[in-house]
Picture 1 (tube, each protein chain N blue to C red):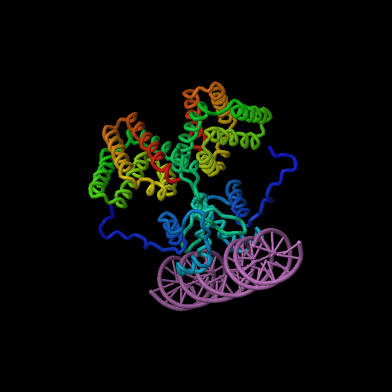
Picture 2 (picture 1 turned 90 degrees about the vertical axis):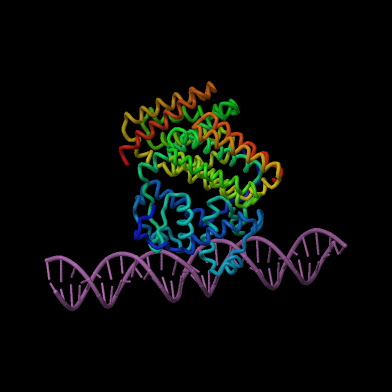
Length: 220
Length: 220
DNA sequence: CACAAGTATGCTGTATGCAGAAATCATTGC
DNA sequence: GCAATGATTTCTGCATACAGCATACTTGTG
């Protein structure tokens, strides 16, 4: 990938970008709970910055949908209704199915192999019941499938929505039976993808995301 | 809709929201051209505000994708490559087709009638060659179809992408022959929707958005 | 004891100030 | 005459300051 001695631009750390990531993580990791108000001053102080870049980061994350802005009253961590989650999962399904169709048609064997490798890795984590690492692999697989479409914009949109649902889906898969179900569905997805069977892949992805809805439903 | 004497909260105009809209409009209307750098100071002065809310608005619009932030060098109006546009149109097609499918299954006759009414209005503007009003109706129709899905999140995502392409598609349809083509495609869409013919609607929408790509290709 | 009005505090929203990095322009050497 | 280098100016990025609104608390009254 990176040629020996290649000169690549220094990654300029902007405070804004840094804060956006930190803020997103705080929400996704559950340190900031849905419904909770954000006090700019104290949060900025905790992160060791002034209110100005903190506010800019809040505005950015708000436009991504994780935070709601209440005029005159600041920002609150957005609380997703069951309907919100169902709708997001539906769009995720639409995008993934479309990506899957495109992938069967245009993805190279090497690209598909990469996804399979991720799947193997994920199964390894499942074997030792490492739920966090399993989950990371899981997300990586779905992101990879989105990228297989060859449409970067689609992949980006997919990624953004997946990020919003990250926490909810992570909590939703806590039960062992649910987890086992998800694993089985993944097997079907990988099989269909390897065979480049577009129809089967559509079926498998749809089933997987419908099941995901049933899995998270309880915790909403 | 609004009951007689119903008390609805006063619409609080936040400077931030106002600026975001103004900034979006400036870009979409072409007052700020792609590739141009934004000077926070002068733009804020022109709009009669200080740099702080202006910067926040810029960050927000940037996260929407119309502006690119260059660390240490401020913000530039984002320039879309032909590939970017093709990818966005593709996602738009995916979302609209999915919305259309859902609409055929679940939309009420009244909802469909609303879309048809918009179509009639649009044809009126076409008859007198009022391109701007025609275009507004056009966008409204596509947004309405997205809403017919019953999935608000899908509709919102669709809306956001459509907004990004607004200017490019407006310019792309300048030629009379292209315009006529678009009108014909719309007729097919409305016919399929009225008949609740999901397959035909998918066909019509796909054709329309593929054609849209051909129409804008020249100006990129 | 409950409730309402007034007061006080805290927070948001906006403006301004300041340091450092870019960009532009002038100057000097070749 | 052109290129490279240095100085100046502008602009961004962040911090701080201030005003107005929202909320919480307190106090007075029925």
